[in-house]
Length: 358
Ligand code: SF4
Image (cartoon, rainbow, N blue to C red; front, side):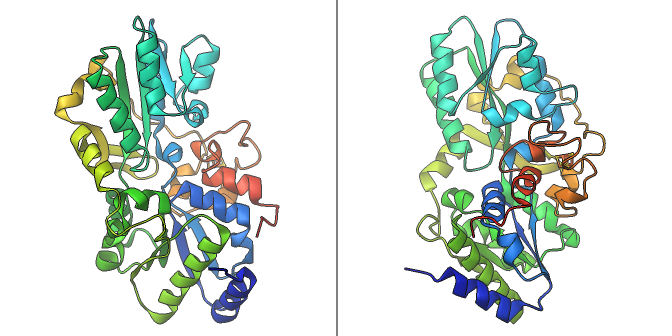
């Protein structure tokens, strides 16, 4: 289907030019795609786009990073991690700094790479930093299961996996989050299915639209949300049916249910949310680095002046942080939202002065 994007944009401006509302996207890839396309610049002035707690690096507490740093200093132990996480500040520094000081930290591109490392280095303990949402969790579950099948005693994960629904419930409970519509994440919907978002309009009367990541998909999703808001409706619309089915990926969800078990998890900005994390199920507890190495909980500390917590709750814009583009830049991030390209601060930094790809 060919779409005249300029016509869609012109119609939004004509129909909703006087509207005042807040739309939230809870997916770091959406945040980046929206800024890159310059959508925030082309919407009517009264329509604000806010980023939510959907960037896995951003919501990871600094106490977790500190646990990983303490492990990285253990002799004979190698930390395997996705690259983004290395620059996230912990309480005392980052994994990149620990690596520069001699700690063994390896960047991997998939959880299975960490299992391969364990096979290649039987004398080393390999600990994979398991950070992500339902989108990443199935691949991590597969890696744990592969390690168990291979009888690898030198592989474990440090779990910090998050599940979006409890966090959204916590945010929306008691009207704590003042938004008028939600742009639901397409990637996550591939696993959870569109049905995974049905509670939002049903229980919270929040207009919700699942969209993809191309400019046209985003614009059409926003147009659908605005139409619902203007008509006083609150429905779930799946505008990304080519990737997101009603029920999602049942095999992936069964795999996750077999390998993981719900646990409480700490979210930057939100605190600890009951049942919002995935730890290892009893059958796979030997692969939990926290048990294996007797790791103690470490309390998270926000970097001084950093407003990532408020930004992740849609209560502040990156430009409102005193560190933005001063002490805090993508080269020298003070907080996690400036680290990953999916982080709100980084997206605002890269695309604030450009018109976007439109
Ligand atoms: S600009 Fe930097 S310090 Fe400020 S909220 Fe964003 S990441 Fe945190």
